[in-house]
Amino acid sequence: MKSNSIKIMVIIFILLIGIGVAYFLLKNPFSKQEESKEISYETIQMITNIRLGVSDFDSIHPYLTKNREILYLDQLIFEPLLTITQDYKIENCLAKEWTKVGEKSYLLKLKENVTWQDGSSFRAEDVKFSIETLQKEENSIYIENVKDIAKVEIVDDTTIRLELTKEIPFFEYQLIFPIMQAKQYENQTISNLTQIPLGTGMYQISKLTDDQIQLVKNTKWHKIDQKNANLETITVSIYETMGEIYNEFKLGNIDMIHTTNENVTEYIGSMGYGKKGYENREYDYLAFNCEDSILQYPEVRKAISLSLNQERITASVLENKATASYFSLPEGHYLLGDATFDKKTDVGEAKDILQEAGWKYEYGIWQKEIEGRTRTLNFSLAVQKSDEKRVAVAKEIQTQLENIGIKITIEQISDTTYQNYLKNHQYEILLTGVNTSLSPDLTSFLGKGNLANYENEEIYEILEELNNITEESLQKEKYKRILEIYSKEVPYIGLYRNYDMIAYNQNLMGEISPNHYGIYYHLEEWYRK
Image 1: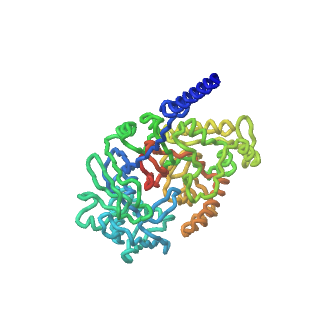
Image 2: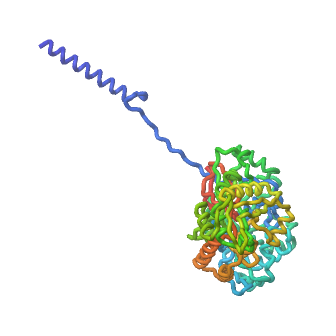
Image 3: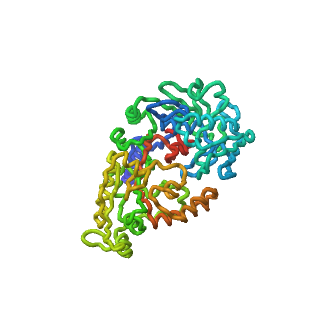
């Protein structure tokens, strides 16, 4: 009986010790059985200022500046009658509608809810003043936009009629120059304006000194759906050189830079920031003389096109500092729509095309008897001697074509001879380039008197029809047909476009989608964190 009592007491004692140990472990913050975990949430602070930099500053006034970065910045301050979207479509801005009312006449209805940044109303007289002022500013970047306007008529406060000196295809693309307030210049000129110039845009200038430009959000802006932009202010620091801007960007004192410098990574490195490359206006291509005794045959031009590899040119010669481009309209252009440009590299198909046309590959070169003479595919490729990049590209083209039996002799010509070739169209193959227009007009490439001496009556008719077509679906249909003819007859071979780059701090949030018209698309969504 006694032993049973002792056993019971021992069991109770052991149980009490176990309970005590368990209690201790549960209460002990260092317990391995059950660790206490604290959940924390990171709060992202939205910074409503973006910091930019500009070098070689000349003037903030859009009619006077030659500085590309200021011109882009001015798009946020001053607005045009019409603007251009990311896919290069024309879009209403200060004008709510436009109509071509005659071969050389346009009627524009202006928006009625627009105010200047001082609160006064935007009126038709501001448009008339802007055009007539620009026509006197011969050194302005926008002089080409207005030089063919013969007359500006104010119909009423919100209606303007423009008379041109001649019919201009897609003239609406010229109406992208900034409009200025007439009243501000009643007693002053553009060049001696003592006040900060006024605009109607999303932002207005609040501070302008020798070393800084400060923009603040325009609370009177007429685009209600976008006036709640995240960025309250934009601070632009003015530097003497681009090198200083690169250094400030590396130090984190500038949030975004735009550059055309192919070697920018040598200055800012390649890591630690986001980047967005995009095609600029510089388009290089081969022009064939379609009146040449051999190059007049489309099958020869097509075979040459199929034998060239543009991707290899951009990689091996241009070190991926350009992007392959096959047509004068930029990639993503709305008029290309679902039309596909039939460009591929296929040496086998090139050989088949030549054989079907009666050419024979003998002794390392393609030959054919034409009008009693044995002719060979042996051409002169003219290139400016002073343009080292194009000379290097010409040598790569020579190598690629000679590998399949098309002989190329590179003719390195002087700048004067090059200009004569452009003027007189006397060459066999010419490596050239152009700063492409924002207008989708193809007259200079495919219209009468074009550089390639190319003639096609159907294309002439389509280009003429496009002068009076504004319906997008019909425009796309016409361009699709042009591409079909172009791909088959190959009067030119597109090579590449040079590209620009946006580099931005990784704390800069929002969609960055530049094109060669503007770099601040979707700015209303940007912010810093």
